[in-house]
Image: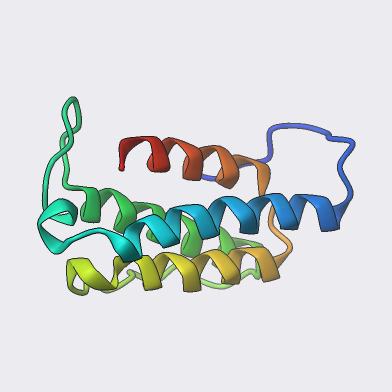
Length: 115
C-alpha cells in the first residue's frame, strides 16, 4: 500500500519530523476519542473509525517490515481503545525502518480527516 511517490527536496530529518508530527496528531485524536466514537461508522465510510485506524496501523507495519526485508505479519485486532497505541508503535517502526514516509503522511492525513 505504501510506495515512494518520487523525489523531494526535504532532508531525511525533515521527512521524519513531518511524518512523526502527523502521526502524533492522529494518535492523540484516537487516544482522546470515546469508545462509542471509535466504534461509530463516519458518514460516507464503510468501516468504523477503529477499523480504519487498525487498517492504517497494519499498513504502517507492512511498510516497516518490507523496508527491513522481513515477512509481513498480521497485526492483532485489540480493543478499539488500543488502536491509537497500535498506530503509534507501528508508525515509529516505520520511521525507524528507513522506508519512504511521504505516502504514509498522506494516508495519515486522510485518516485524520475521517476521524
